[in-house]
Structure formats: structure tokens, C-alpha cells
Image 1 (cartoon, rainbow, N blue to C red):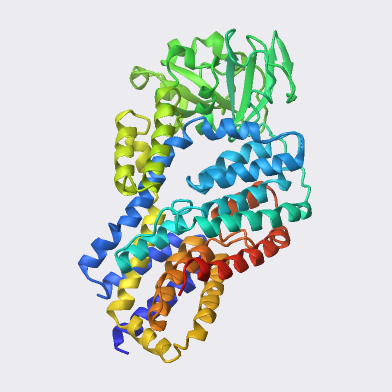
Image 2 (image 1 turned 45 degrees about the vertical axis):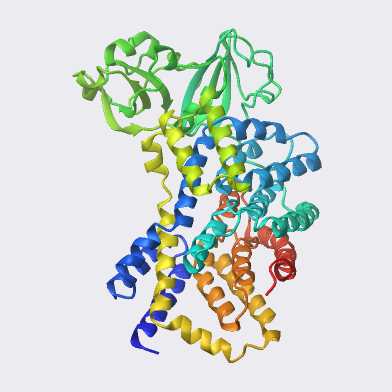
Length: 575
């Protein structure tokens, strides 16, 4: 082999080694791979430009960006509030069905993130009995369609680059459906082996947010549980102030009454979740300040508001700002926000007016920390547009009426035009890691071809092209991809193993699709390690699991998953 071939293989080996050693930094590893390939002259400028503008990759990025609008609606949260009931088996089945369905068309990480809080805060069941099934269900749901998981779209991106063709929307559906049914049955019976871990209750850590229930609010007359107030993401209802009295802790069966003050604790960036409830007014909202720039400050020792309440200081008139939330390290804040006596060192989040920056008393009273950008929500016609537009685009693409990439471009334009999404949100949530991983590995595949490694491997395999070895090669490819998924990440495994699987198929002179689909399914088969798939890592921390919990349930699921894939792929995609 020429020198370029050895150099390419060396970079490939370093990439795999880097992913194993630096599991938490795949972006840095692939960034180094991209720089090495370009710096060593192993790829052309045209190949570099083609890799970063690959149609499959652009489709994946557009899909992620458009799905942000759905995350901002109440859709998933309303559904989440209906999933959990007193009967565990009914809850389990509802959770599994909803998660697999939504994960087939939405980013499964977003689906799991939305359902985490309702499960963790539910009053009926140990969250540890539901969180692991939640992650596994999202993985299985992702195998149902082309857009169900980034893994499928990454494989499709590379398939387009190699063959000029694209997989269809339903290429994965037949095998994915069998996986959902068989692995779902195994999960159902194995869930009894999950531990019963008591969930830590919400504490006073985080910002305290005061919200008033208006007389005409839809919350009035319904319980905390029925209103979905226990199903918020990173916000916890810790107190209710009612007619001068304090209700704490708050029972799920507590009925909301007019003029109640609901005291929440949690992340200030999740503040605008409260906007989804009609007739719930946040302390700063009545002055029209809530959608203004939010700024985090610390009260100085010499501040004139120290020792006084916000109500008595005339805070808005003094600073042209309204206090949205307060946090006090080492102590608990309680009661209505306006009645809290301010201390030096208190953290405040302010919704500031146009005159705020010109006030000369700001720096005398506060240390300014930073701006705060809350995660916004959309409702009304914008919410319906986002939901309807996304579902319509997916359906039209699935039936072949509209190209998916073109449809997503039109949808994203509509979301921006109606301000359902903003440019700053797109910049902040742009999936740089996925873009870098996919474009780097496409470049690596080009380098393997340019240097002659693919031809050499094809000639080597051609010496053993007995048809009886093809299925053995498929099994070995599955095992190698699955191991890389468990020890590295699913996206990296799919990206690195695709060129190997594609080359093996060419070497045997058979159809490449069985090997392509095997890589895609194997890369999504992460059930034993909490680190191989992002949703596993999310529930690993949230559910306080141990590694053995993943092994006990994940091992039988992995075995059944592997058997289904290795039996069904040759049937649905013959050699």
C-alpha cells in the first residue's frame, strides 16, 4: 500500500482510540480528525465542501432545528401529564407507547428531556421503575423511521455520499416495528428487576419564583396534580401562600383557589414554562417586563434595599426593573416575593426596562453578573402552526409528495417569519457536534477511497468471497458496531463503521443495503452501557441508577434486539 494509505489508517486508528479515551469529548476528536485529513492533503477541497453540505446532513440539521418549535409548545407536556396514573402497569404501557410514537418523528433526546420531570415528580411510583424503560423506549422508537434518530440520518448521509441514493422514510419501519414489539415485551417483564429508589424531594436550591393565580384562571378548582403543576421541567412547586397562611409541603391533591400565590423553586431559564397556564401571573409580568432582557445581579452590602421588602422599597421606580426571582445561598426564601426582606448577597433576576442602563444607582446597589435568556414558550396559533406544519411536512415527505429537505426549508422559513423560532435560538441550539462528526467521517471515508485502503480491503475480502461467509461477515459487523456503540457513542459508531460495512459488501460483490442497515440498527442498540446513548446518560443520573441496573435489564434486551436484527435484515434486505 502507498504511504497515504498507511497515514489514513493511522488517523482512523487514532480517531477510534481518541473516542475510547475521550468519551466525553467526541467533537474534539473528530475536529482533530478533520484537521489532520486536510493538513495531510488526504482529501480535496471539493470533497471537504461536499462533506459539510451533504444533503443527508443538511436534512438532519434542519430536522433538529425545526423540532425546536415543537419543544416550545405544550404538546408533549400536556401528553406527559396524562401518562402517569395510579396503576403501574397502565403507566408503563402508556409511557412506552407515547415515547416510541413521538421518538419515531422527533429527536428522542428532546422527548426524554420533556418526560423526565413528570416521571421524577410523580406521586404514585418510584421514578427508577420508569426512567430506564423511558430511555429504552425512545431508542426503540427511533428505529421506526428514517428521521427517528440521528443515527439513521447519519447512516443515510453517508449512504447518499457513497451511492448517490437515499434510504426511504420507511426503510427502517418493518424491522423497527418488530424490535419495538419483541424488545418491549422483554422490557415489560424485566422492569420488575429495576430498583425502588426514593426520589430526592425538591429543595430550596435554585431561584424562588412567585406566581399569582387570577380569579378567572383555568387552574382554579383543580388539584395540583390535575393541573400538571408537578410535571414541569426543573421547576418545583414548594409553597402556596393563601390568605396570609403558608401551605408547605404542597400535596398533589391540594386544590388551587383564586388569589393563591404559587411559589416555585428551580432554574430561572425554565421560567416561561409557567406561561402555558392561563391566568397564572408572574410577579414581574403585570408590568409587561417579563419578556424584556433579564439580568442576574447580587445585592451589595451597602444597597439601600437591604433590610427592606421589595414592596416597601418602590423597586420598580428606583431601578426601572422588576424582580422576577430571588435566590439566597445557605438559607431558604419563603412566602410572597414582594414580602421577602432583602439581605446583602441575595441573587436577584431582574426584568429591566428601557431606562435601566441609564440609572446611576444600579452599580451602587448591585453587582451585575450576566444576562439571562429564558427558554421561551409559544401558544395559540403559533403553537398550532408549529405542530401542524411539522406533522404535515413529515407526512408529505413520507408519502413522497414533498422532498423532506425542501419541506424542512419551507417549514423553517415559516417558523422564523411567524417568530415561532428566532435567529438567536437557532444559533444557540445549532447541532455543531452532529455537523462536525458527520462531515469529518464523510471526509475520512473519502480519504480511505483516495488512499487505496478501500480497494485493498476489497481485494482482501474478495479472496474469501464464498457466499457462505457473507452472513458471518454481517454478524461480525453487527458485533463490532454494537461494541463501539457501547464503549464510544452511537453516532460515532455509525459514522466510523459505515465505510467498513460498505467496503465489505463491495468485496463480497453483494448488495450493500444489508450491511448499511446492520450498521444503522447496531449503532442504535445501546442498552447495557449508560454512556453509549445520550438518553441512557440522562436517565442514569436522574434515576440514581448503578451500572448493574443497566446490565440486568439491558442485557436481555440487547440479546433479543441483536437476534431480531440479524434474522430480519437478510429477509427484508436480501444479499
